[in-house]
Length: 405
Image (cartoon, rainbow, N blue to C red):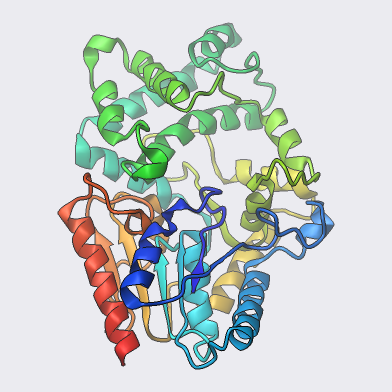
């Protein structure tokens, strides 16, 4: 069985192609589930905070267990071995299903699964720096120079018009609070973070700006100052993604995510995923480390976002307790059990919260040097590295051995 990736980082499910290939080679039936509150699976019909109370990973596991039990009876599959797959947050669900329900699921694969919940995920940007430096050691240094220039410019309102024009903002830049400043800086850095996380993932991100292009632009002195190159990268991304402008307003962000209306024709996942980070996982990618190229968005930005979007009861104390509860319930990286595979890419920042070394023979890690988020899940392509091809064959071989047993 396949548990599809939900909204940990994206709201589509194209990477299931590799799992379908595994299923065909194993002669298996492949089933794809939709997570409650994402897509068309709306148990309450709205996204109000009171409705989202029923949105959690534990509810998702219970839904999957119910599905597996009922379908096994209806399709006469009670004697078959069920294998659960997932990527990113979906990878966590796959791992936890095998840990919590080993009698129902014979094996699991959790690709790029950040199974350690963490409220202050400062390591994310540390991996971003290392990934950029692995391509060109000067690249993160220039990114930091550019970011520092923007920080300095924000000190003076006279620069706001220039920043608005240079970064093609949807609304004139207004900095009325520390939250406005932090959100603007996080919006710019977010583009660089996405580039590193996904890099050369094929199919979905074909043609997207990748690390090669990013560092090529940032280290090209003929393009002007580090700030000029920073602007150039943002423009390349906006053009590539066909964005008319960049929305970097904190108030607009909060207003958009506070909207609890659910439109079945315009499916969304942003409000739902932010709710889960506020109530279960944290995963807040802060600049609270000196070993990364950005500055200006610390943990308090993300905690305040949770309060402003869902209510004052969602605060630092409640979030710290929620993250602790998640790790106590699932075990964090102290995984117990058997027959779980943990693929991760060295470029992907999420590997910092995952399993990258073998725990035991039946809890193997497949660490892929030079690969990005959920790279093993994508369809095979001509740009796949030897490491990625070998990783997929290793994963298939392990699954085949376990199922034959």
